[in-house]
Image 1: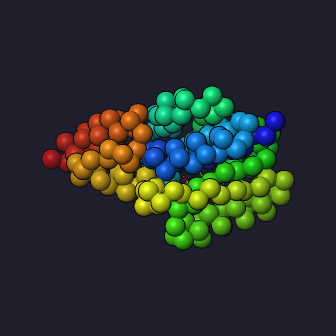
Image 2: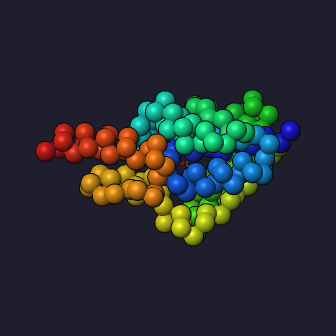
Image 3: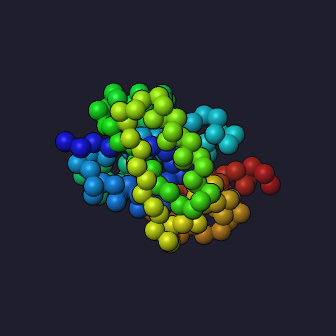
Length: 167
Ligand code: PNS
């Protein structure tokens, strides 16, 4: 049984994340998507970890070997606990490389039994990021085709509430 872990903040999940999850699920017997609580990231996430887990679960429900869970620990500890010795991450452009390289090296330093593998984004997802999607939606732009259907409604709703709070 080959089990892998696909970690991230997923605030919110984009079609880029979904593409990486779909491709990784075709390689491994089981893929656990691990949603980081990440309370400090960029001033705090827009969605609670439960909301993010729910959106990722709905968007990946068509992949029977994918499960989704929150985590608030070292990634290598979770990998060990779940007996998932491979961490799968998506790589978009060179801009991702430095951070991803650092995280992969650190994780290897923490536990050399855990390997990190990268799936290179498809060209149509190269420019996609959760923060860009939030910025577009925050100014009332359309995110159709950039995020799963399960995300777009909730994103518009959450950012609409924020816009109303500002005016
Ligand atoms: O969506 P992101 O920002 O690429 O996700 C980053 C994440 C959650 C994978 C990373 O911050 C992480 O692994 N956090 C858990 C804490 C940890 O293990 N840190 C040490 C390695 S950097």
